[in-house]
Amino acid sequence: MAGDAPENTDPISLARQVVEDAIKLARAELTVIGAELKRAVIQLVIATVLIIVAFVFLLIAVIEALGALPSGLGILGAEWVRWLALGGIFLVLAAVLIFIGQSRARKAIKRGRKSIEGTLKEDAEWLRELTKRSVSGS
Image 1 (spheres, rainbow, N blue to C red):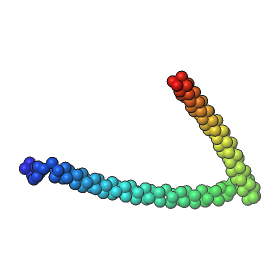
Image 2 (tube, rainbow, N blue to C red; image 1 turned 30 degrees about the horizontal axis):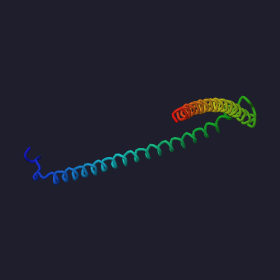
Image 3 (spheres, rainbow, N blue to C red; image 1 turned 90 degrees about the vertical axis):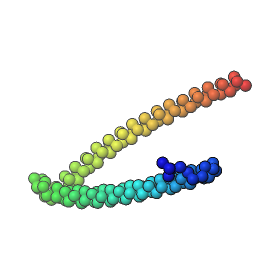
Image 4 (tube, rainbow, N blue to C red; image 1 turned 135 degrees about the horizontal axis):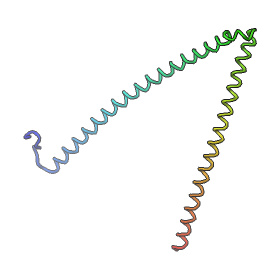
């Protein structure tokens, strides 16, 4: 306890000591924050690299699977017919995805338009009330 007591009881020197201690504490906190941030950035970079590598492997797997798919369709006869069937399947899938995407986009635009119209109506009403108060208060 005796070591905790300040040597000088002058208020100015006590205030100076408090400020110096606060500066030391702030620097220590910044050092800790910097170290934590650096560690977080490194972990994020590692995670990003792993995800990119996984996507490359996934792309290779999809390419290999698509290349092998026509061979499995031996029932259809000639190789060109198998490739044509595979192309038709992808064409149908693309059409379905386009239809779903367009309908969702239309819904999102409609919802956004209603939201904007509602906000504009609220703003206009607020402005009308504000001008009524200004006119009646004059």
